[in-house]
Length: 201
Image (tube, rainbow, N blue to C red; front, side):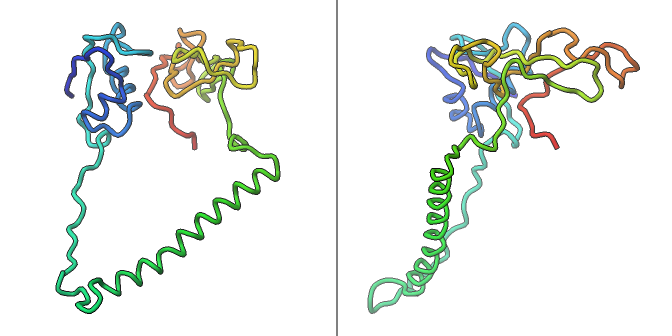
């Protein structure tokens, strides 16, 4: 792994672009999981911080060069100055794009008519939500540390309704959040965040 010494006004987004990392969240999570506790970053990056940069291909943008265009210039129709076959292919492709666009517009129209929003049929997690481990004895609440400004279904801004993000990897209580562990013969659970959230099976 590489290291990068941050400059004034650096952000994870800019650093990710500089090192061709797929996503700023990959970079932030990688750094926080591999650095010491004192170097964990939740908000803005302090100037002069050593950021850990991943070098694994799974984190990097795929910069493989596209295949070269093998079109032979001699194949262009000398009468009209362009390739008729290419034009026909383009005309054939356009209807499929138009159909996709029409289907999307119809879907949006249906949502408007039925009163549905883009949030319907989606689930959102709040701070007072409970996490579950099928091997643990307790169900801790989430602990939001990534922000203090987004709330779900609460105009008053109560802390219980803070929106949990994929950067929030701690629980309340922080020590032994899941109690005892059946895999460890009833010994205390040793919870360790594994990084970015993944969809449960």
